[in-house]
Amino acid sequence: MKITNPTENDIEKIHRLIGELEGLVQHPLHFYNIMVRYFGNSFFVAKKGDRLIGFVWGFISQTNREIFFLWQIGVAKDFRGKNTAQQLIRRLMDFAGENGCKKIHATVETGNIASWKMFEKMGFQNVSEGNTIVEHGKKALVNYYGSGTHQILYEYKL
Image (tube, rainbow, N blue to C red; front, side, top):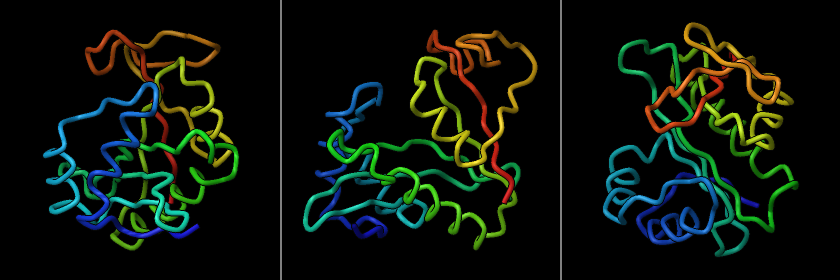
C-alpha cells in the first residue's frame, strides 16, 4: 500500500469510492476537483497498485492554527480491518505536526461505533462539552451540525 497526496487523476476514483461508502456524503464531482486542486496537500489517498482503497482529509483551522480538523476518512470495504485507516491517519498526523498543529480534532456520529473505537484505540480523547447527550455510553454533542445526529468530538494531542 502506498499513501500519497491525490492527483487530478484520482478525482473520479475518490468521488466513486465515497459514493460506495455508507454514511459518507458524496458531493458533486466538481467539489473533489476543488479539494484536490486547492487543498490537496492536506488530503491523502491510499492505493494498492492502481486502485484507490482509502482517503483521509482535513484542514488547518483558520481561527486557531494549532488545530487540524480531520474532516473525512473512508476505506474500501474489502480493506477494512487491515490498518489502512490508521496508516492514513498517521500520515495526516505527520502533516499536521509538520505544519505547526498541536491538536487534531475529529467528529464521529455516535452510531459509527467502528470509527469511534478506532479513534480511541489510536489515543484520541472524547472532549465533547456543552450541550451533550450520552448515547452508546459516549458523551456527544447534541445535533452538532444540525443534521439530526449527535457527534462525539475527539481530540488528539500531537
